[in-house]
Amino acid sequence: MGTEFVCCSFLLLLCVSIAPGNVAASHTGDDGVGVLRLPEQKDVHSASHMGMGMGMGMEEDDLLNPGAKVFATIKDIEVGKTMPIYFPYVDDPTSFQFLPKHKTLHIPLSSEQLPQLLRFFSFPPDSHQALAMEQTLKICEMEAPKGEVQGCFTSLESLVDFAQGIFGPDSQVGIVRSSMISKSTPLLQNYTVVESVEISSGKLIACHNEPYPYAVYACHFQWGSVNKVFKVSLRGDNGDLVDAAFLCHMDTSTWSAGHIGFRLLRLKPGESEICHFFPAYDMVVVP
Image (cartoon, rainbow, N blue to C red):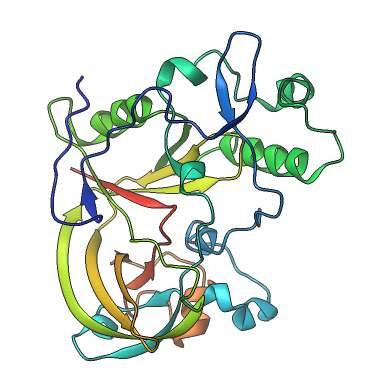
């Protein structure tokens, strides 16, 4: 299975190429393997994960969370429409760039090995980094809901193998992700839709970057689901432009009525598709 990627314009559908040694390393193991440090203040409850648990209800306070302002419907991305959207700033882009497979293959991704992993990375057991690693490992070890397949991936090669197992062994694999915002861009502001283009529909894999000393993506795919992904060009009130990945779940009839997307948009299960914008550090994998 190869790692040839479909390339399209801009950052949204891109040809991923991670050169060996592309590491912002502050720790090197005895074997010389460089690994990324966890950011000291990275929020381990990423706003992007509000789109992961499709049947999960959330507390009423979450409706007031600025990070929840990522949900919309297809009619909301018509050219000229304006809506408030939250796009988190990415302080260190290397934190979501895959390392070469040979640099992570020998490091276990296992809760049972957490004490050894903390020693390897020199993280105290009661540290912020230890908590983040523990939560990521729990996510990676969760049993997939009925009708879904999921997994955690630490290299481009392993993600491509997973995707080709779903799309077909001879399929090419593309990655759709949003462009990054600058430090001067407000995290939450009104955006006006400049352009909206459907990129792909059918089999799509959503992948969420999890806090870890190097890039770990929790990816999930639902068999029989109907999804669409769009590239949406947006202009903020401050004038900044964002090209955003916009994923739509077309059949919501089996979702919990308590899902935050329904409550934010004042909709009911099966009444409409539910879509959400992706931050720059998450991605959609498409054939």
